[in-house]
Length: 480
Picture 1 (tube, rainbow, N blue to C red):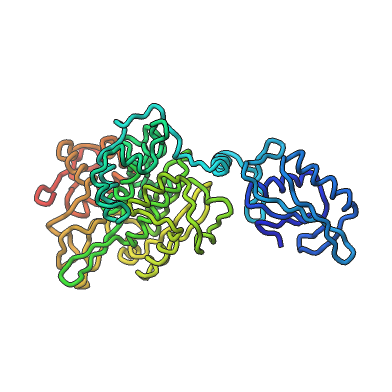
Picture 2 (picture 1 turned 90 degrees about the vertical axis):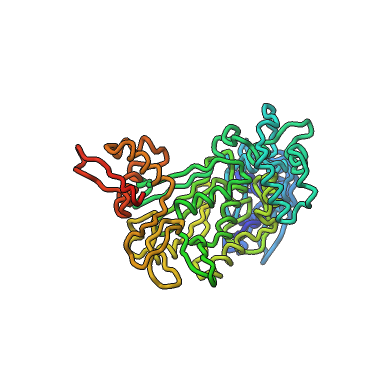
């Protein structure tokens, strides 16, 4: 059976040089001439002539030497062509081919760029940016890295006194001639999108379809701090935090295991192809998806991730900084850890797939669906959360309002920042239309404004006086 390293051909054609090229560009392999797809020998009539022609064509066209061997089975001659992995990228008639699985792929675009850089043992993040100076570095981000690395015991206490320049040199983020690398500017830059316009992390809350965008956020900060910023944003606006008590202590964990969530976020940042588009996280009523552009390393599949495997970061300098900061491991154990965290909490582990030139992780919102019941189909930003007393409480996604003894709206209401912004705007502009609110609040769509107004009315914070025309909004000061 054909595989990553074996190909069967019934007869020889010169176009099969592209298969030899693909093997050489990958991990090497063997092509058998005179063998059927089921690995049975059918034989070739001109074996002796092919034994002379094939080595010469491989050498003249591809510039490499292949081991060509004449074999025989049941009086039938067949040929094996053994190809070693090439340390340099090879082309066949100006095109790059690569063997992956049992298929031959012609490389182009980002895949070709990744392949060429890997063959030359360089990564995109090592590229120097001549125009950048040390003033572009955010000192707070560097301090954050030092604290994290010391806390993770991957740097000793002495690193606390290192200067910004010393830290950058420690992390090999400065070239031999003193230029900052793109990795330095993304990890610690004051304005990372100045150096890479697609370095942001985008989060969206969707209703019934992709067109139904309710609310969105764009996280733009030094990459080393991005996992924290994303988790904070998710906690405040997008995910529920079911409340329970451990003894006398009130605990509000996220609806999905935070350690596993952070691992997925870090992987999306470290392995992203920064010449592609931004990372996209979509929050739906029943599931969450995280997609980052960048295919798996050559010869890797989804099944490879599920087994013990070596770590092959796309951006080595960024990955090294994340490792030293204690944000990731360097042993290829991410999938195992994520699966274990979900399983230990009785949740279905995320699924992973290669999609549209990148990696997609899908997380089922089991706890959200369970505590929301039927409301999960229509209510994106609140959830009834059951405390240890067994009574349901209607709370925002961060679970911070004070509980009451019934299901009515409590007197002490916690509002999200977006809701507070709407309230403040309507206090000053009570006759504002939904369109005017949409223009005034940049991170809300018209659908999001409609939802928030409806939610605030249900909470008793807002009242509509009069009709759509000529009416106005009344803010209930005793609550808001």
